[in-house]
Length: 171
Image (cartoon, rainbow, N blue to C red):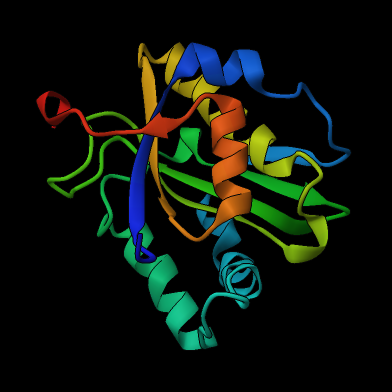
């Protein structure tokens, strides 16, 4: 299969049951616009292995996210992870994705962890934090996209209960 984005979805209760509770030593906070100067740097370093992003492109991506270009940003369900005052992980959730080929449920449009902090449970903790907010607001599922070639991300998502989504009735 060529490298393509795959849409996956999970039941929120399954995510919460499978996530490791508080296995990291940092602080999870809700996304707010004060992260405007921090997020583009994390975005650039987090994706450096896959593609090159200039500071201007990263800032433009941040602005597009805030403007709702990828769906209505759900700030409360978009946790950020800090260690010693440094942003090392970010998850951004929209209430629903704007694309026709995605389920109509909260959708993770961004999950990035700084390379030096990967495989420490930060991604799982961010997903669990977002899932908890979704559950508190009556949602039952959470969806996201993952590159087919990203075996580490796919492994995490499988562990948390995400499965490939193909249900046209949910569109």
